Image: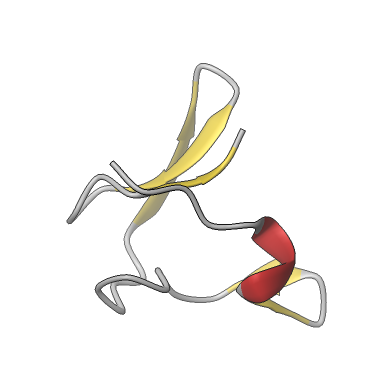
Length: 44
């Protein structure tokens, strides 16, 4: 999986979409924010 810095996908301090696949289906689990569609770890 790729990792992308959080600041590259922030919009007014709110994550809006996955930078890899464009999905808005994000989840926060085990201290990580990740895309539920493609599995990209957005922030640890």
